[in-house]
Length: 205
Image (tube, rainbow, N blue to C red; front, side):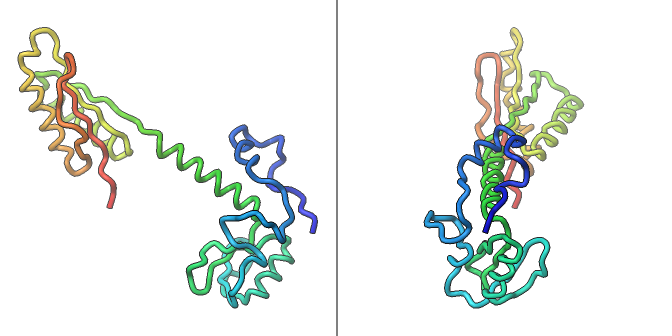
């Protein structure tokens, strides 16, 4: 069976990052490939009488394996086992090369997003009043709800370093006010003219 293309869009239109993923997949016959694959496909799906079909452009439900593989042939696509441990196993009729490509691309995007940690800074003075404190507290709450880390610090200018205990109290009060949203990564510590505390958003249960 002749396969026209691996991907929906022409190769020339693929973005640079798409091409790096596409290079990992080589056009091969749909049947009988010896290369180890993350899913069982077509005749590789053995010891199964019935399957639950999901996907687009078909009536979803339970089919015999023979009917499912026949339907895949008629659509010139692959029968791909995506949930082998269910009863019956769940299969999808798709272009397997395109399925692998999209799956790899999603994994790459998730990895990039997971490593992209944004740290937002909140600055206090040693004599910060309640109005300013609450204003900055509100900003910190928004940052944490968005999944960002917060670096809060008290900046001591000139002789104000004499009030470092007061600065530590501000940061401890700040952390306590955010206890429902954040965990303290490190206790307040003095670094030069700054007393710093780091907060990370709590994982949602």
